[in-house]
Image (cartoon, rainbow, N blue to C red; front, side, top):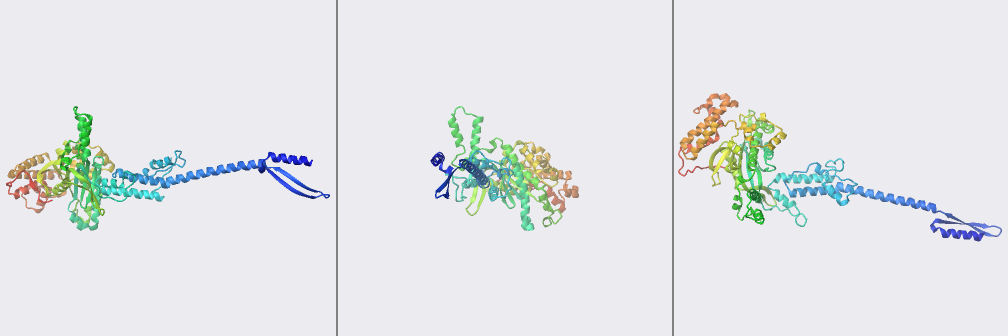
Length: 592
């Protein structure tokens, strides 16, 4: 039996793994002088299998937990760190490509990523930079995380660059923010970026009697300037074709506005391409045509380059120039309608609380080429436009005050306008402006604010935007602002003035003085008959007496009369109605 037991134990040991057998050896002690031991063998296979299966489940659970945790951490890293950094880089690159683009809106800055994105880590990064939503997740408020604050800071800085430097500084912003050929950004800021030649319409607007404002308001003059700038900037941008209307520079009392047509070479190439489309030359092959178009605008001499194209020949230039002029005229109307500006009339420091003050502005405009770029050094940079045409626009603004007009434009601008716009302009004079040897025909749009209640035509910004978008040449005869500010002009006055101006240019000063004085009387008569001005109603028909010695009447007649008529008459009477020996139909303006 003992042998059988031993053999059974041996068979068990051979069938089972060592880990599945438990041997228990017990000392039985002595029994009648015999020693005996007890050996017990336990089969724990089921237990080990159960433990192994549970261990496998535990390891699988831990593995899934680790994968889930890594995915969650990865989504947080993408959402809170990597995606914001990519968005910051995206903002910078967007400004590098086009510095004039607007600041990104809220949806563009609320990119979110889903934690269970199935496209992989690299796709998740790309989606984080491009996506605007997170599968319905609510956006985080700006400032919730440091990265969001960095995005806000980068956006504000780039937006500030755009507003401070404008179109003229776009090149320097792009060249310093854009990556080079090796994919790296420039480390050192380089302000000395070459300028580029552009075609544009240039406008100047100036607040009159600025020295009085500065002395009276002291530091508060900044508030007045900003109120005026808000109106001017809004109207210039609103009426500019596309995004062409930009306010380039604020010079205290004056503002430089630019309606950018395009780069010189770009405009010339497109003009050459249009010529080939409209007037195809069958004798030339395509390669020669393409080469000529590509070389259009590439000249060695700057004068040849600028004068190689007539702006008036560009398709659509009439509407472009009309909208530019409308931007200045609507600024004039807005200055006399905007409550924030009109409130300054009641400031005791300016009008002594008797309404003796009003914000008045003068405008000047010219068209042509300019060099666009940044001027300065690493210490200070001004992005601006350099050209004789910019200077001419400034001269027109100053000359408008000499003629007591609201706006003067050059012949170059007049030639670009639509037929309907040219019909309502008045040819004023032919002059040499100070600092120039080129004779200029100067024109005006007769605009006055006295006797006009611009508040009757007030409209919301949304309505004003719609009005600008619906522009047509008919606006010159249908717009309420334009009609009212020119209501003092009659066909009889225009005809009489034109005859007087013609005699003046021909050197017949005696006849010119008579006609221009008659035109001046027609304007005064028109204003008196209109009865829209309280100061006129108080004086009555006395204003029609040109021989009156009453100081109030004389003052009112000078104020209500036509500035160009009075200016030209004063010049000819100073010459004793005798034309100078070297008279050629052009007179020299003696002041800027």
